[in-house]
Image 1 (cartoon, helix red, strand yellow):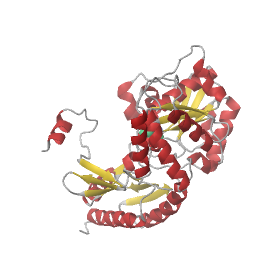
Image 2: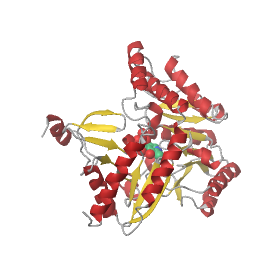
Image 3: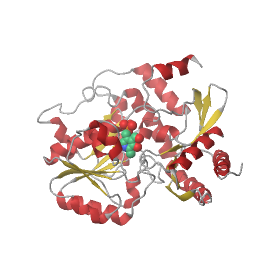
Image 4: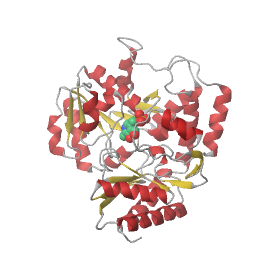
Length: 401
Ligand SMILES: Cc1ncc(COP(=O)(O)O)c(C=O)c1O
């Protein structure tokens, strides 16, 4: 056992009894290179982070340049830091005009917490609405929204009250009333098993929030920046949320999150009391520099269009898997789920695919669903390689090999 693996096992706090356990030497493009000399095609992109793949030269150059200029100099929001200010302006320029303020954080969960605090303070209400199957992160507030009781139960009492509604069911929306501060929703549930609600549901949700004054928060942590075939997934639904939460691809591989809203809404955080929501590292200059370089690339190359075309082609090919083991294949852009009839088969499929040099994984709240979310820059040849590996893995399940 290598020294690193020994320390990993003995000293790194584990969150799973069966981690994937690849020992990474380096990563480049769509590939992870392991210390045993094997390489693996990365079809999960660090769970949606590496939209440009790994080691993108423009991102690396931006990191080096900012690191030489300065690292951390002051807690969030006190000094004018060019890369932070540029990042806020850049994100605001990509969102609808009403969402012109960007609060930068370290992670997705932290951004969710900030969004919840903002909504509660602005409305003076406490109740929250979330959806069955939802995943918004693992801090207390974000966890309270989680749509899977098994993950919430051991950690209570969690902030509340939270009402969990059926995802995609307009009839459930009557539960949103004048007590509700915020409704938090993923425009596509990834951990929930790649579930895509209808346009009518989202229109009804927007309408219900308007009627009751509840703040509508879209969690685009995973869907943002092109993954679903639009720059932001809310564009599929032709509605504008009151807040958008971002992270993952935002930092170009560095830790960065954000919640974005109108000045009126976010302004509530600077009074009564002032400094009511602060963070030391939020919007770290190196993360912002990396994120800006990644964003430039995504915008210049219009990577969301690429995600839509190659995602659709990939989904069609995977639909050929539907049969005795596979119940359904669904997806939007480069976020695709393969739904097995049995969780054990899904797990076996993941293991067989990884053994063939392609990394995929299952989803937290829908253990029968395997998720595919590669870098948006993945090539057609690499996708051919991935499909071939998955065809072989499925054949093994069917006893063909
Ligand atoms: C939709 C969604 N929201 C929030 C989060 C939490 O983000 P983080 O892990 O950066 O705290 C995740 C992470 O997977 C996510 O997928």
